[in-house]
Amino acid sequence: MQADWFGAPEYWLAREVLQRGVAAVFLIAFLGAALQFRALLGRDGMLPVPRFVARVPFRAAPSVFHLHYSDRFFAAVCWAGVALAGALVAGVDDAVPLWAATLAWLSLWLGYLSIVNVGQRWYGFGWESLLLEAGFLMMLLGNDDIAPPVLTLWLLRWLLFRVEFGAGLIKMRGDPCWRDLSCLDYHHETQPMPGPLSWFFHHLPRPLHRVEVAGNHIAQLLVPFGLFAPQPVASIAAAIVIVTQLWLVASGNFAWLNWLTILLAFSAVDHAAFATVLPMPATPTPTATPGWFAALVIAGTALTVVLSYWPVANMVGHTQRMNASFNALRLVNTYGAFGTVGRVRMEVVIEGTDAERITADTVWKEYGFSGKPGDPHRMPRQWAPYHLRLDWLMWFAALSPTYAQDWFRPLVARLLRADRATLRLLGHNPFPDAAPRYVRARLYEYRFTSWRELREDRRWWNRTLVGEYLPPVRRERA
Image 1 (tube, helix red, strand yellow):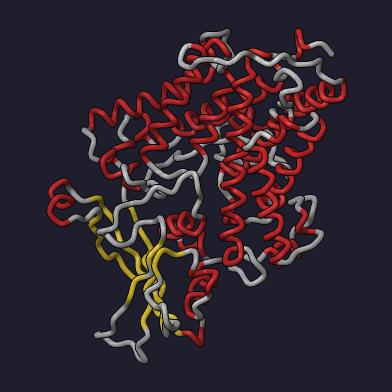
Image 2 (cartoon, rainbow, N blue to C red; image 1 turned 180 degrees about the vertical axis):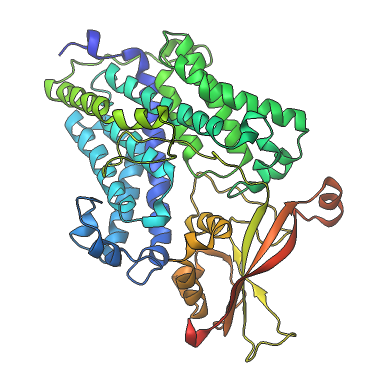
């Protein structure tokens, strides 16, 4: 098949950025799964995979782990994903035949789909489905043997449109603070996992917060339509998306959501746009697209058109859902976040003691987490695009104990027996020599300090005890 209508060689560099970048995100995702799964999903984890696959049929959650599960096998899938993603980052798909490159991307997608579909609450985030959908489309981008398919580039822009426009709609329909432009008076402080610059973003002048919100509405509700316009309008729209997403990268920790959105924007950046800022190498001369690959791309496009009914109906409907998948393969999803913004930050603080009996004088020692706020003097860390799954769910636990009822008590039980896999998820273990006799959890309200308090006390947070979250639990009763 000739490349005249099917291929777009002027997007050769855009494909390189997309495929290397998405492969890098897959590498981070598989690495995070390998390092965290034993305590979260392992055979003795808080939400074990064997228990899940015993009650959920394969058709509802397709996964290789329905066929076989062991902790070693899960680890093997994770590390194989790391290796394959690393090879794709290095460009191995351009060094092999087109069919082999297609199979490599398909294997990466199937491996991560298998993890997400048994991941339960730990994998219930919109960026998991976003990575899977983007990874599936990478398979339809081809390699250096052919020009990037026009249809796949349009599918990538359609995905980016759903990410941005869906997020904009859910805000305008949700919390009134998005409409009166006041949400960022609170959001930098109450977001799930603040970053090292979040304190400074919070203390920006309020008029600038209004400008931030207004700019967000423009970037998410108007700019996405420009992605489908002729060049150079499409490249300008992509540039606006990239700049606004970099602002979000700087202001918080949202795993790989922002980075994937940035990568998707490159689907609208052509050779001429790159040439305005970079010295451009000569575009490779592609060969004709094989018929089998063209058929695959056309089939993928037709499937996307059919499956798009559900996210479109969701966006135009009166009860828009955030971050929802409408099929077990996690393809053509709907996206959106922060329809509601919290005004007050609550944090669950877990403490333990090795005292024989609990009295008014009992000394309690606090467990430290790697990412979520804890010690008021500890500066928030930058973790994104890496995803700390337990830290994120601790934010949800503070909002609603019901949300954490299936995993919080198992977490406490593992702390009481000093489970090594669980302790590796934490930033600080106050009982390095022996397990505590009791563990409890308390609920605090956290507020960012003022400029004076940060300067004089080197303290990032003020916290006030709200009450008991979980009464003391003894080791034998956990």
